[in-house]
Structures are given as structure tokens and as C-alpha cells.
Amino acid sequence: MLTFVIRRLIGLIAVMFVLSVLVFLIFFETPGVDPARLMAGRNPNPETIANIKHEFGLDRPLPVRYALMMKRMFITRDLISYGSHTKVIPEIINATPVTFSLVFGAAIIWVVFSILFGLAAAVLRGTIWDPLLMILALIGISMPVFWLGEIVNLFTQSRWHNFFLFSWVPPLGYTPLTQDPLKWFEGLVFPWLTLSVLYVGFYARVLRANLIETENEDYIRTARSKGISERRVLIKHNLRTSMIAFVSLFGLDFGILVAGGALLTEVVFGLPGVGLLTYNSLTSLDLPVIMTTVIYGAFFITLASALVDLLYAWLDPRVRPT
Image (tube, rainbow, N blue to C red; front, side):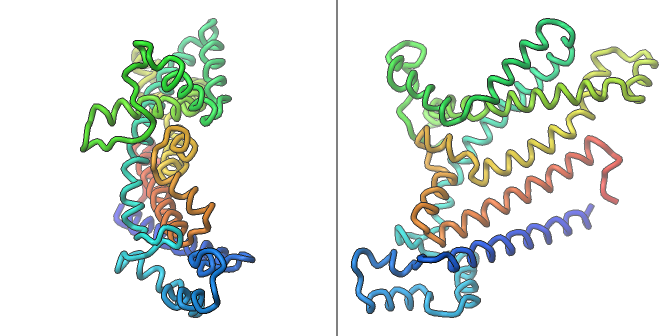
């Protein structure tokens, strides 16, 4: 197990390094991109541009510029945004709790309901309820997050806001958990539901297919021949094995969302998370913020992948590292 952890740690560092180098090279090889000119404002004179390049180390060779950026990001932690001229690390730190709050809540909802719907569809296979549940799942998959979010806002923030069902919904934005737990919860209820709808439908269909596929495996028949109840066979044997693909998908999706994949939900509901910060930095070609968010995203995606492998080992002893 120690070897597995060390190997994963080395892989994490390698992925972060390769991605940071690629982003850095692509940025500076993009035609027409000159951070000094962008920071200098309108109609800058050559002296101003030269001073900015010298101040930010942009007049040095590429390897030196990369090393300076990594030093300011990880050691001195005083990396400055080219756009807002503020420190990047505090911006990421302030945005991270917003994204984590959104993704954790949505993940709990989609895991619980997708397991319930998937189990129900598999148990009720051959009845009218099975296709009805799968149609509902398909509808959930088909609805774009940004469209569903706008519809939710239309009713909860505008047309039906004064109706007693939605009068408690606060204005768009984010309230920190430490500031007001109740307002934090109220402000995230509909973002959680909006983000989770797609994943509930998709994961329910995946789980149902896996449950049906493993139903006729030898170990399932053996468990039934021993007189074990159908409920125990379903939960302890069938569901546990069927969750392997579920866990794999969940780990990657969760890592992607934490890394900034919840951008559309953050934009629609006015949540100042990492996804929104990444989007704004891309539109303004703000390399320090782009680099930091890319490394942040690579860290969480690689970490999620490692945790998935550990869950694999728990669900299926055959894949445990030796």
C-alpha cells in the first residue's frame, strides 16, 4: 500500500508539472499575446511596456520565467494577476470553499438518488415502473445545466418569488457557511438540485445496467443457492460489485467539478467559485490565474483518481495493490 501511495504521489507531481509547462508554453507561443501590453492599458508607450516586462520578469528567457512563476506560486505565494494586479493565491483560496460547497452538496444528492433510482429500476424490471424511471433519467440527462438553472431562477427569483414555496429563497450569490449557516444552505439548495439532475439520471442508468449484467454471475447464483435472502444478495453481493463502474465515474466527475467543471452552475447562480475565476482569467488571458487554476484542477483530478483506486480495492479484493 505504501508503494501505491508513493507511486500515486509521483504521478500527481508529474501531471502537475507537465500541465503547467504545456499551459505556460502555449500561452507565450500564442500569436498576439503580450501580457505587458495588456497590463499597460490603452496606447502605452514602449518605455512603460519595457518597465512592466522587467517588473514581472517577462524580459527573461522562458525557462527563467517559468521558474520565477513556480517560485511565486509555491514558495513565496506572491504571484500577481496580470489583470486585477492582486495576489492570485488568496483569490483561489477564497473561491475554493464556494466550489466545494456546491459540488459536495450536489454529489450527496446525485449519489443517493441515483442509487435509489437504479436499484428501483433493476428490481422492478419488467414492470411499467422500470421504463418510467429510465425515461425520467433520460429527461434529466437531456436538460442542459445552464438552461435548467435559468428556468429555476425565473420561477424562484422572479415570477413565483413571492409565493410561499419560494419566498425563503435568497438573492443570487453566496453566503459563507461560517457567516450564516442557514443562509448558506438556502442559497445552495437550488444550485445543488440543478447540478445534480444530470448526474442522477446518468448514474441511475449506469447502475441499473450493471445490476442487470451481474445478476446472472456465478457468485450471485452461489449466494442464492445458499439460501441467502434476495435483499441481502442484491445489497451485499450484486450492488457492491456493480458499484465499481459507478465509483470510477463518480471519482472522475467529482474531481472535474471541483477543478472548475461546475462553471455553468456558478455563472447562472452567481457563485464566485473556481470555475468562474478560471473563465474570467481565460477571457482576459491572465496567465498567473490560468496557471494556478490548471495546477489546482490537476491536483484534484489526480487525487480523485487515486481515491477511486482505493475504493476499487475495497469493493473488489482482486484489484488490491500488492
